[in-house]
Length: 267
Image (cartoon, rainbow, N blue to C red):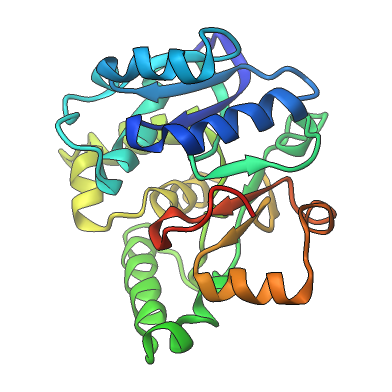
């Protein structure tokens, strides 16, 4: 398959996230050393708002309606589907996925995502930054139970043994050919769609990561590239310790202010 670009930045967004999307866009304008193309996927009706807030240059747009017919709601579930279906556009061989609640805090280049000899990095870890806080947030291990049930079920489908992994660090590098292989070599023979996969286990990152391992993809594993504040407790602790964007930038490309706990727009 031929692609328009080798590597792009990609964000699925919509009107309710416009203020966060503006911060993300500004950070890319500031730190994008290699001038990697940046694409938004948004509903057609939201284009005038994005152009009024961000201007009309510095990014490209793919409309949700051109990716999938499921555009009636902007749920987390539907956003997962948009991300899985993006490969069909043939826009990029690699796309680094960022969400609207993320922003870059230091300069980055293509070699942060793919080595000079073309080997991609893949986020691959045990989700400890989330699981260790779960008992303090919920009073039990429900997050650990959920994590295991999601991952182990998909692992079993691909006959993989061993530890369950999280292939997400909020921001992730995706390879279009992995999603294409998942669809052509797993979905089609089993008369399934990506929607069916997500209805079974709604973790697009796990479907991607487990199929990447199953397919024998050559990659270098890496820790999450963005510092993610999954819970307010994590944010409060880092603030109390005096961590700043500058100190965080020594280990991370950016910050994720997880919007599900009504976080501030920036750290």
